[in-house]
Image (cartoon, rainbow, N blue to C red; front, side):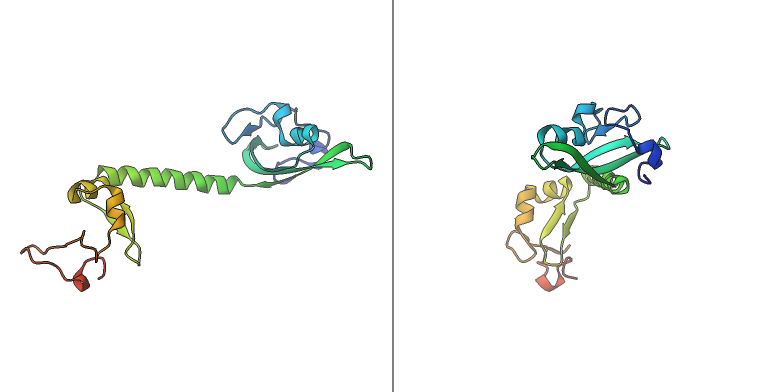
Length: 173
């Protein structure tokens, strides 16, 4: 009741077909009553796990829920009901969307930069390189990812043209 913002009296007797829900699937498409997971479980006898749905609550707030449905059978094996559990994943979905947005934002900044950027982990594996780095080194991203600071493919030179020893390589310091 708390997740949906409804009292027990309001929730009791509301079917998947009720207009209150205005339920949408994870793609944002309006769900018909027969496409609700409880209805599918009743019709097919199959369990439904982690069905993502966006619903309107009693407070007219949209919430994203993850639904699990288990068909119930009588002593003769006939389906006579369904138990539906759900959890509020609105905040989690919001974080995932925020991460996607930040990734796109980061990618747009990196691709617009004239400076080459190469990000390596503490084992000197290349995690990320931008287009400018590829252009500067005249290498593809795959080629950059395959070489490390000790590989022959990387010969860092100082301004005077002398090779920089491995221990002075910028990524090691």
